Length: 182
Image 1: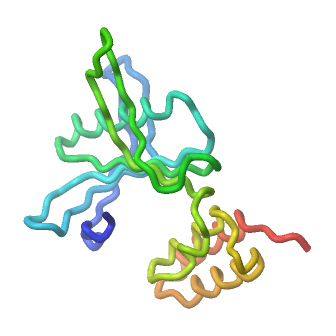
Image 2 (image 1 turned 90 degrees about the vertical axis):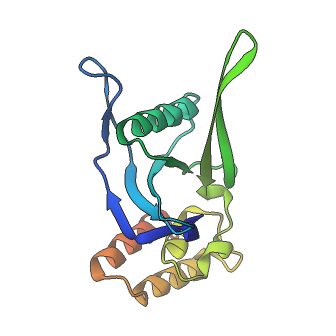
């Protein structure tokens, strides 16, 4: 789906939303950005990415609530994605939130989920995108071993076309989440 978006025209938006004015609670979403589609006539959409460190029973409802708040505020389609940092969340999957009333489903909300710990680092180690080797630090260890995986990730980042600030941020992720024993 990323290939269908024009990342040259991305604008990051204010992440703060309110559930109700003036008495509602303040919410801060992780990442909200405007992007244009590349398919057909360019269409403005919102990308909403929520990073979830722990399993929470109410998380699917929260994703729906964020979707509804963004859709009402900006009046454009929203593409919601949850990035899970805990194992057992299913790798790449579609998640669903449903509401029923009197035995009938009255609302079905779908969002995409990326369970990093359930993905294979080897699959994302190669490729043009420097996020692959970076996020591989949070994935299942490589078949080549963690030491070689870390060395290759760092080399790919250092040789990337990114500016020094972005390189430093991504290298910090690898260093933080892929610690090696002495």
